[in-house]
Length: 281
Image (tube, rainbow, N blue to C red):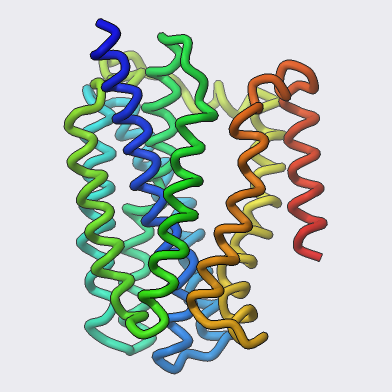
């Protein structure tokens, strides 16, 4: 029994470690690729802004599908496969209108991968004594390692981001076959009205806070890679910059449960939002 438990734990570590490698490649180096094919900063910003707009529509759709599915794992596999395949369409054309369509289609699948992964993981961990922090830490480590490794590759082969991202999504896809099956809350036909969520004042305040935080994150990921290169850095140094950025997550991921017990979640959220804002100044 202990061996099975340890194997499942390792699978979740692998899920996050590999999945976040994809984030390191796509979020960090896509703006660099777009600049390399001749797009202006204004065009890049406009293009990348459509991703969050699609996510606003896609996440409720996939969230609903996951809640009603007999296996959230299967829904996650659809997202991984769809994201991995559609990203291969990017290098087929440099036309702005074409890239706009591709980024919308890719984001439709990609935007819900990490939220659904968290939902599956947290639901399973609620039945165990394991903490989420160390598992999420595997994602940080994967992000950091891939940032450095791909930074060296992207120095000469920036267009390889799409093949590399596709491969990582496929690896994550196969890991999902081994994860414990998690059913959707409404898989038995029980329906829950969205009004129940809208009436939850704390949840609405959290969503509002998250909205403003995501604005700063979107700006950061769209322009920091380009700005960093304008300072004289190459893709290798860009990868290392992401490593140092991810290292800042370590204290909370290792000791987060103790920090939450002492300070409470609301104070932590406000504190992290403040430091995120200060870091962007």
